[in-house]
Image (cartoon, rainbow, N blue to C red; front, side, top):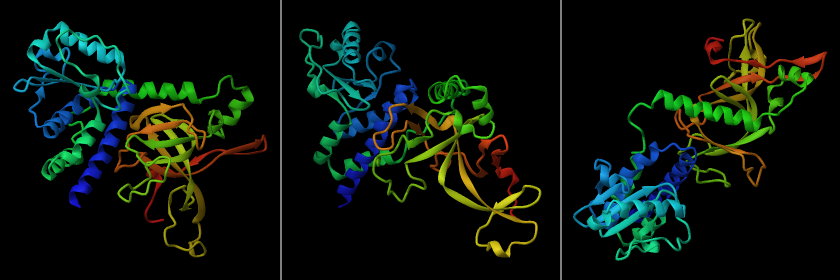
Length: 362
């Protein structure tokens, strides 16, 4: 029973890892791939009973391969790209650097899903390379799990569960700035309406979401494996995907509205607190009760990819995120009163109840 449970955990972790790496590679964030090489090294060693080491310390070898087992004459290239031209490029570099003299076996590990076939690859005469057997992906390891001992299965499970994908070194601030700025510009170019009239721009002062092409987005974790079904995993504090209404961009990200609301109380100074267990009719003089919209602020720093291919169920683009902040998709969640504009005489500006204005004694 324990063995079966561990196999299921491995399959779940592979699914999460596969999705994360595929999404990050699409926006050319390769740090995850480099770190993942060490996972693949450990996992392949256990699954195939070999002794791979990192090749990147050897300049001549690292041109074409990432991992090597000199004793068993095995070389491995780890890549997030499954296209045939990438495979051919690896083979060409492998032969050009005479690595076929040193290694009898070349494996190419796809961080994702390999293609169905790789026909007509150019392979050097005398070197045995079978694309069906030597281009492998996570599915290949999963297929081998049933042949492994319970101890080996538990080792693989522990490698994945220990979350060694965490980047220990501090992220380069320049890289982070460029990545965040690129996502911000993509949101502006793809989600904002063009050629707004003067009257439209006046409305935006009261109704900022009027500037967006879509009224909502699908918010989805890069670790989500539940979509399109509901996320019933009780370990997740918030669903790994949900639909939320766009409100506005702010300096560091995007504001989203959800259908739930906060019951709050506000004093004459604009300071506020949650109603909690109190009854509205028992509130002291000078304290006003409000039902406020919940506003989630999602930083650009959490964003991985904006997928403009609308989802088939709701018809909205998907914003893929790395859940941070205790596995949440937002940095803060605040109450607000949504603005509106009906006419020159009937309008209301948005009012935010910032966390800095929250007072526990109200």
